[in-house]
Image 1: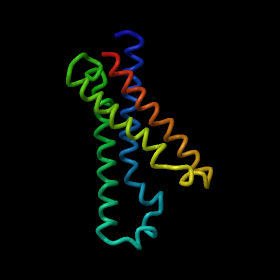
Image 2: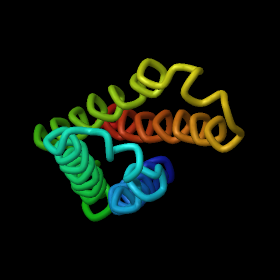
Image 3: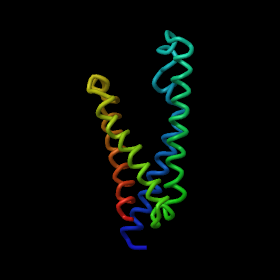
Image 4: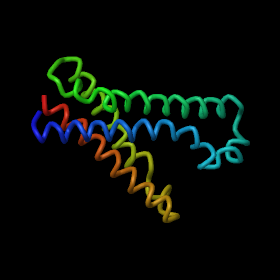
Length: 140
């Protein structure tokens, strides 16, 4: 394996580890964002849908992170399945990258340094994630 392929392999594993960590971190999201008092006014069905969707988003982050974390060399081998997985990762995380700029307008993050830092950090994170998956896909 060449130095460039090793680099992609390492980057895939790092992306996978970050995504798994991000997924597991969804457990703390309701507490960190102080949802309990905010959700008190919601109808029970709406509240349960939001918690349930958060849980499944966390699970998806873990699952989408496990493939590159545990199977990076397999994902870099030529093949239709690998291309399909890497392509799906590119589309999914590319949409998340776009959502960073569309779904979170400046009014949602300009109020505090923490929100600005989080916004910028996630913009960089999604850029890196998409770049790694796209590089792996193009390496085929």
